[in-house]
Length: 186
Image 1: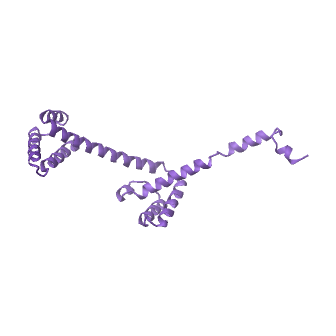
Image 2 (image 1 turned 45 degrees about the horizontal axis):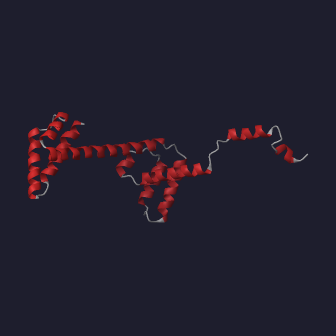
């Protein structure tokens, strides 16, 4: 008897042995492993590019925090920086990164919320300048803390500034006033 008979598909035990091997190992393709490694590398690069205040909010163990600190000190144009990023990616492979990803998502959400609030203030300021009293009335309905008389004064001052091509002092003051009142309300 040849060895081929026992290892061939004609062998009745061949399928069972093959099925057992596949059940024991969870197959992950090489492409999938590379994709995961690339994502972790990007996550590491994101961590390195954060500000000191934001890094303090990210939950990291001591080894990862040290690796990130070293990468931040290394000159980004040198090869050592690239190797340090690879090392960070490698250390992230051995860890559960969900807490880190959640903290980064929270930072991103805070940034987007701040941008939305800024744009709302700009829109309110522009509507006061363009529409005058109707826009002031709408804002006062939303934010009763606003002073109608002060808003009207800003409206008049801004019109005068634009006619004289003067520096936009009242324009900036209106924005700051809206920011103080509308931001405190939220």
